[in-house]
Image (cartoon, rainbow, N blue to C red):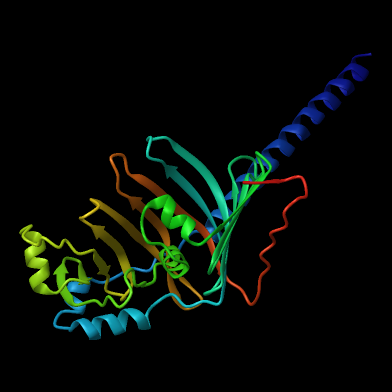
Length: 293
């Protein structure tokens, strides 16, 4: 009887031990998997030397040509990112996006706030804006001026795609960069000439021209761009950090976009994966039951 009892106790303990071993093995495997993925997807940030030392003595044209030569180059691009969006009321929303871009043609964005379920889909072309609202089952169709009307500033497709990837764009037609000065560790290329810069700093310029400035790092990449319109008492600023190598070009994996106001609108984008591809699809089918607005 005792032998039979001991046998059942042994079987029970063996099962418990086996279960514990499986749990330990599962946890070990799980954490190993997380460690492996973390190592695989970690960003390799490219360091930048001081621009004020590297580019000292360069003229505006020389520096600008170098910036253009080091712009992010791509034809088709895909990316995943997390976004923190703070609106003018101070309310902050967090969501993930899948981004697809076809150079000089289209920007496609899928927005997923929770559990990977798509809430909205946006596509911007050179002349149009389309947005699917899957929550309210509506579709919006507007021309490209929609962004400008919403933000009360000049916005076109070239500006939009350039801001996303951190490239140069021309805000005003026929406006050129006219001066260069240092702000350690950057140099700044400005649309104002040196006399206008001085008058603007002294607040003696009654015309208050729109100013476009670019902060350039030692890798000839734009670390910050800013458009200032003192007449409207507004500015739009994009700050770029943590540049990573994507197929031989430097891409800013961290972007902060600020639109001034009594309470500024701020969008923080942190890219977790950026890839250049040979081709891509930009699916945008509107379900029959969706209402236009």
